[in-house]
Amino acid sequence: MIATTPHTTLADTLWPRAETSTNWLRLTVLAFIGTLLMTISAKINVPFYPVPMTMQTFVVLTISMAFGWRLGVATVLLYLAEGAFGLPVFAGTPEKGIGIAYMMGPTGGYLVGFVLAAAIVGYLGERGWDRNVFTTIAAMALGTSMIFGFGVLWLGTLIGWDKPVLEFGFTPFIAGAVFKILLSAAVLPLAWKFLKRS
Image (cartoon, rainbow, N blue to C red; front, side, top):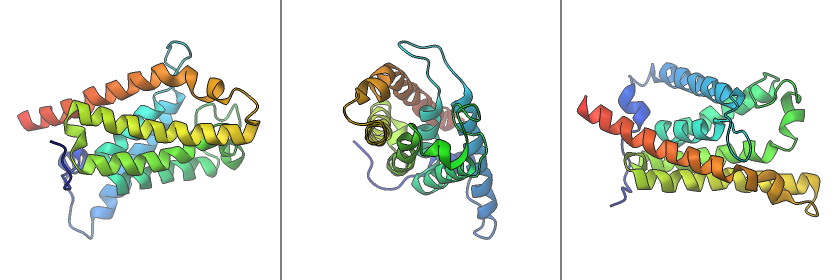
């Protein structure tokens, strides 16, 4: 049965909420840790078929599910703000540009997709979808489709729909996306099982 009422998130379980007056420090630390992990994951190129992949969507979606939708979205927005201010947090930066100019390039739609995906996946995480392999797969697939959807729409607008947009912005990444969805489906439920045993 799929849970529809709010549950404690993985982040709240690992680091319980403090008094209201000090909870902002906990949230700030978690958000900055999240942006650091997103940055590191964007810089790692993993050999894969048919193209190398980064682990960024895995980290974005897994963090969002573990944090819940509010903190997940806030973390992604902080990450985007860091990039907008010129910090080299994105894949290919600073070699391929930095700041707003980079964000308006071919990957801009995927970055916007991160925000919506964080909201959806985080909301489902708050409802216990990260405690079961099958619901985790469903949530991650939905989040991934949001990222690709925005990415392909922006790419088509940018380069023109007369070009093979799906061949550039979607098809080569399907296998990597499936791998990352399955990895999330292994990591999150296992984390909950470990916590219950502890």
